[in-house]
Length: 243
Length: 101
Image (cartoon, rainbow over the protein chains, first blue to last red):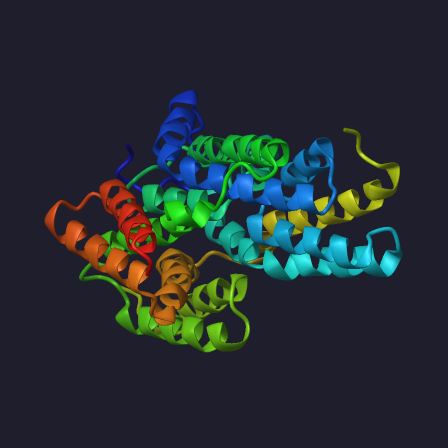
């Protein structure tokens, strides 16, 4: 662990030990990702996607909400015509807009790393592993491969879950009964409580809360995250006092 | 068990859209000078995002989720372990749903 902030121009550390730390610490998240993957596999099966097509979708999109929306749209309106393709791609950009924010927040940490590390790290980025990584960074983690390690740890069960769901058909009755849809929410609540300290910008947090609740009324899902993250960042930016 | 050829354009489009979102924000930061003010703003986003994930669920006011969030808060006060807290939260949700909430 380094105690001083590394220079922006210097290369950040990148070791297998860092990759492994991320990989291991993300394991609890992988349970929830696996079951969510099953849910997608089941729906994709219902919409007549083959196993390989479901896996390809999970591989290139890797986002539950976006894939569920894309597959439902395919079931309703086909997917061959240009306007259908354009509207599905646009829906994915809107549903995944929060990743623009996630990537920006990783810049101070990873901006100095080479593209052969940053590109795969961003490719495998998910909600859980991003939050985990930002928290690790706040606690002194500087190894950039931590992000890739935790990302791969969540990506593999996503593919595995898709595979299982696509094959299983209707075997798994209802993942909601097991409460797995709550796992990410539970982690966020616990980590959020752990993160709140005396130095927390409470005004920023309160504004993020207000933004999330306001947006949730007419655009639930990914947009509450975008609104909360943007508003929280902007308020902190506006209230910043150099110490 | 193959990929239909007429599905390929869609797959390329969704792949490009997803990759744009993942790389776009990171790439955009190239154009911005990271002052302490910008860095403070970026560092405040994780907590804000967590609020954005938790708040709508709490707002729905369903008993299983509210009970789970309360038990998570209690566990974080006592033993400060987020893994234990999250897993207990999941089992509380499952139990409440099992008994019919």
